[in-house]
Image 1 (cartoon, rainbow, N blue to C red):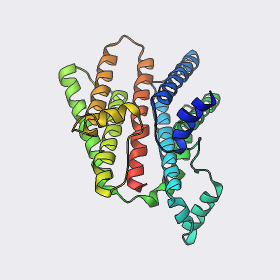
Image 2: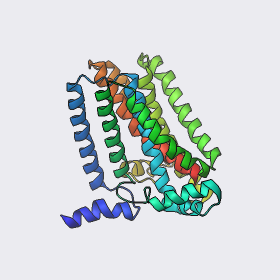
Image 3: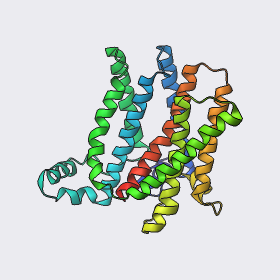
Image 4: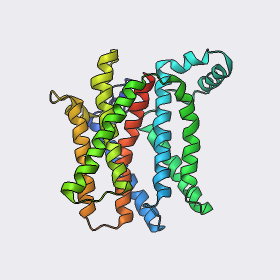
Length: 294
């Protein structure tokens, strides 16, 4: 058992080889079980998944998790250590950050650890908000956690052109779906549905631009870490452009068929938020990492 854990779960993290079929299935199963348990617990407490407070709270913590993951990329690349030798207040801040080791590469600062920590913080903020009877507490807490991470990562931004290219492609794909779904699917899209599509569009667009455009232009060896995504991106001459098209198509189908299901809107909203998170979380991380050039 120890050898299996070492080979499929521990070594891929420190060898930077990404995911494999075994850990992908295990992580997916654990995520589904945890999500179901959380849904049952909060549903029993009449929690409002459809409210804007929960939506913005989830968005704030996605930003926090993805941005803090990029700070670990900056640490791993040596950029934080280099900035720590700078002069003035900036150098002092990065020196303190480097000495703390808070973003050092390890189990809790890379996937899936960083997102487990983020989920724990988010759920804790929800519990505190419920105790305080303040539905906006999670959004405020997530924003306050994200802001310093963003400010720390901001000075490393340099590849703005490629970042704008990814955002433009994601926007074009998302707006095409916003136009086509009502036309052919007779689906009037609400905010949750639009964000679910936008999140998947960003993930697909960022992956395509990072691997098929930015990597080739700069000579950096980026690769897709997920098994299925990698297979899709290397299966045809379209490269990861096919991955982008499939992501927006799948998100559109989910939105379309979910809209026809006779489910409670509260439960539908949770599904749509999860679909959005699964796109925005890796998409924002990829976008920020490309901007920082790590």
